Length: 361
Ligand SMILES: C[S@@+](CC[C@H](N)C(=O)[O-])C[C@H]1O[C@@H](n2cnc3c(N)ncnc32)[C@H](O)[C@@H]1O
View 1 (cartoon, rainbow, N blue to C red):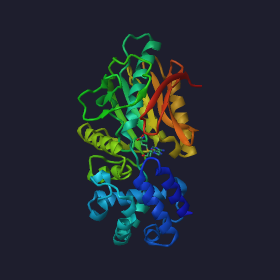
View 2: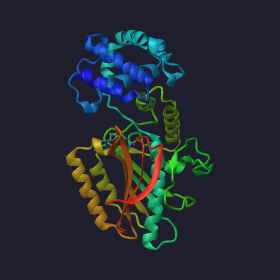
View 3: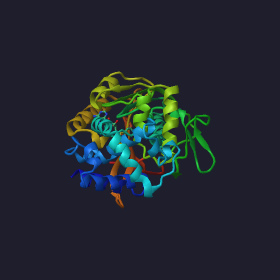
View 4: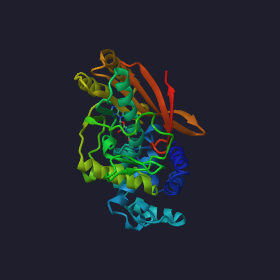
């Protein structure tokens, strides 16, 4: 079973991470033969598929490399300046597994796959511009609403500063903060259906997560970094910059379950402000009971929404499989305006993204 899960994880990396693909393929063979991988994975044999044991194994090994404990292996890891030699990778992995078996076993057992992808800030930014503009239009205002952003499942909170990021469009324009240390190439086809010159004013930001990551600590930074596939250098650099931005502009991510936290925050209306509830790549991890609770909390708040205190739900979640890969959709609902829009679709990391407004029912 564990062997199959490693093989699955290897297949998932094949297109985008030759290093992890080779690592997990060899580790699956070693596991089947009862080699040192079996010792590292002892105690995790019955883990659920959803906990992705293969990626926990690869992430834990990456963490050792980031901590400087495996110099003989680091030469294969582009994230620390190495160049992968696929033919010799496993020969350099095995001694590290043997030397650090106890530590790795502990890491694999205690860790959960935690990704906080700053690329998802790009569809969020466009979605917020549309939300603030359409809510204002519906209320007969000439200016977009300022926004209160409430994020569920915020992880390290890296998507809580969309107005502090620059977005370089293919026509040479830069939206957002042109001087930000985080400049994204959002690879947009089409554009957000709104006035892109309108400023995005965020008057309040808050997030919650069942397992928040504190990116102001080295431990938190290493945790998020270890789950970026080590040969995906664009993502790696994006993450490092986003973490530095988060340290410069801290926003607290509270340890709490989404529905309880949301109920508390929505109980305090903010007149003159559009409250936006946002989540990305969270819904699949939420239990059915919590989903039902979340829907109730939102429906109650939606029933109370007024033109003076409007409410929006903005989500970026996988919805449909297209050619073996999930398509992620950006969806918006606005109350009391009664507007429901499918704004567009993109990749799991938010980049590239295609804007394509349709009604969402
Ligand atoms: C794949 S990560 C996505 C993080 C972030 N939203 C992003 O797009 O980069 C999913 C996050 O959802 C959190 N999560 C899962 N269930 C939750 C719940 N019921 N309440 C709050 N957070 C939850 C997990 O702890 C994890 O940090």
